[in-house]
Picture 1 (cartoon, helix red, strand yellow):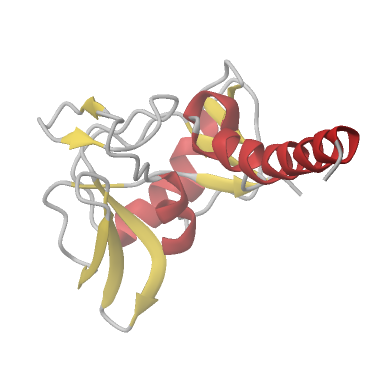
Picture 2 (cartoon, one colour; picture 1 turned 180 degrees about the vertical axis):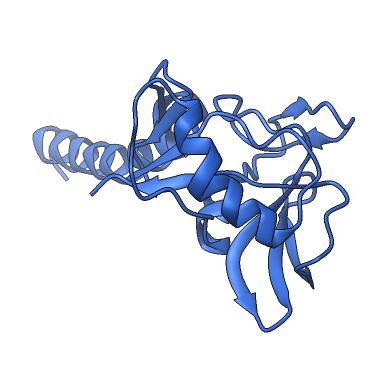
Length: 166
């Protein structure tokens, strides 16, 4: 290989690595993904969603969570946005930070949560909209796992509002 050809080959490899690696790196840096709207909400550019900046700040069962999100939370904001709902399990999973080097933050309930600091949870168990009969999925931001629990249980569970930007 001649010197010029080798330099072009190396340049192509570096460019390909840049194109493949940089978007991945940006997606795992929490600060790049979110914008604090300064009105109690956070825009999630990666998912095309708007999240509540905080949860409901207390133990809540699934039915209460659904009502709090639809009828109470929207009126706590200085700007009235429509279509607030419980997040899907997939949306909650997208908030969990899997990077072992990220320490997360300590919630009021004492749990160490692996979620971006732009969203402040008071405890790490969050109801999802995914339900079947008398149970719904709960996401655990301490461990990054989910499980089903009965809709009437509320110990440590929180409601986190979300809405689609479109």
